[in-house]
Length: 171
Image (cartoon, rainbow, N blue to C red):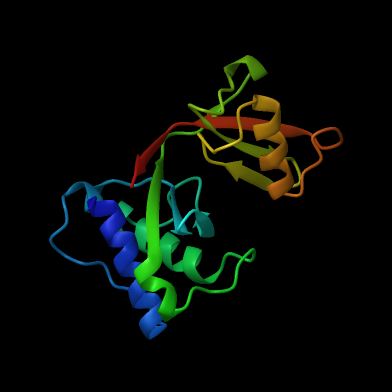
């Protein structure tokens, strides 16, 4: 199992079983302690999404803590789902998405929903994000629409900035 996925799984299992945040473990590759990036942890039960939460930019001191906190949030704070239970833990699979640098889009031609994730940010401070390569999302306009909806943004009415980013996926 990939080290990032193993860490997310440990964080989720620890949080569900104890109700406490996991501390940063020792013994991981140096990159986990020296690198900073936004991270999303996605949790599945079979093919069903059970949680997906993260950040577009780093909010923690390192990648290790970013993965831990995103995993804890994905299993317990995704408002679309009830919190994950101990009984479900053996059935879950995880995906960790490490986000690259956000790049401001100057033209819709730069969008590619298979290659880039998208962040839509309104002047009001609202934002919505959609990771790349989502099943059924093949058109840039559809990707923008979903990201905007997630942030409560009206693409026709609100003044927005659009950013793209690449993702390093771990499964």
